[in-house]
Amino acid sequence: MELQIRPYQADDIKAMVRIWNEVVEAGDAFPQVTPLTEQNADEFFSAQTATMVAEVNGIIFGMYILHPNSIGRCAHIANASFAVAGASRGLGLGRKLVENCIETCGKKGFRGLQFNAVVASNVSAQHLYESIGFTKVGKIPGGFINGLGGYEDIFIYYIDTLDASQPC
Image (tube, rainbow, N blue to C red; front, side, top):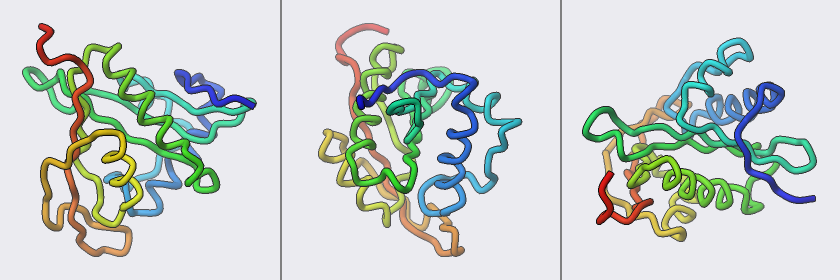
């Protein structure tokens, strides 16, 4: 029973949609409000720079998407979103996904990884990111509307993923 983090395949879509939508529908972490369908998920996931799944014995337990945080002169900084099945949280899978994502950033030529909207109530994510070496670089007061309609602060996190002295 070994964890494998690998690029997603078409056969993974059903499990990915279930895990992704669990986070969307909870309304406490992702900015999206509309769940994915199996029909539009492949288009969404294939449009990313990388979409990776965490699998054990053929079962998908988590995933992440990776893409540029912005365009043009800012496209060398990445952004990512992570989703772990509720029953699998607290087992260290998130850490493995984030560490893999940082490695993938470097391989894809991104110089840094920025999270734009880490919700203040998502304390476990904040602890995870800080323990890996991310820096909390800012706060946006009331920047997130949670699933209950309340406003929460969001934090911006950043980590270097390449040696900044190297040219692009």
